Length: 144
Image (cartoon, rainbow, N blue to C red; front, side, top):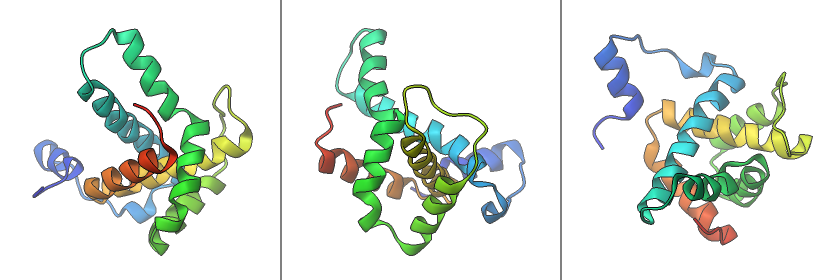
């Protein structure tokens, strides 16, 4: 891939490059939530045509806070020092909201995971997002 989606959008819309180290962990988690959801939705749809409700159910099992907490728990040994630091910052961020049906611990771990996904996306490291997602899904035996 020559250019990541984020770089492409910035170029097409004339947006400035911003040092992503200045972004708050919750900003990284905001975009990371969407990117991880898009990856999982893409994988679920690639499995074949189904009713939208069934697609949503299969996707929701993976993108919920509890599963994201399990994913990052499995993936932590595979993270670089830089990725571990981004995860830690996201996990420790004080969010004004909390996911329903999630413990505070799972929610914070999930926020750290989403911050990592957002960081990798903004660094145009989509291949790393896919690599980590694949490793986590396979490692935990998750069914799409």
